[in-house]
Image (tube, rainbow, N blue to C red):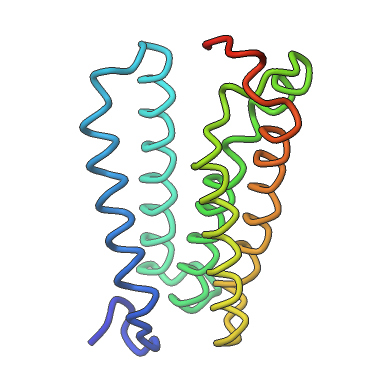
Length: 161
């Protein structure tokens, strides 16, 4: 018996993603008290959005009103959440280009986003699973924009943000 009855189980996807969610939740809880009030509100809204999306998909599946299999419904939901994850750093990209200061972009995080997206996209292509490769390929490209901005503009002469 797996997470979705009758769905194929791929432990190469389940284990690292469960670990990633656990680490992200720990990081969010551990650092929440250090955030400014506006940042706390943003984190709270994001978590509420994810919880509402998860609840809506689950309720729709249980009531039989979603014309998708559970695997497809969760695949679409996961990809929507993944799109939010990869697109989040782009919200500050206009400011970076305008100020020609990319000190707000962590180069290691941006580089890891490129690598993460590229490796998962390659794995998704290898197993022929579009739920894995499509959005991760998009994520690798989006993360490349952040990495490119950091390379192009640097840290703005050492100015701290």
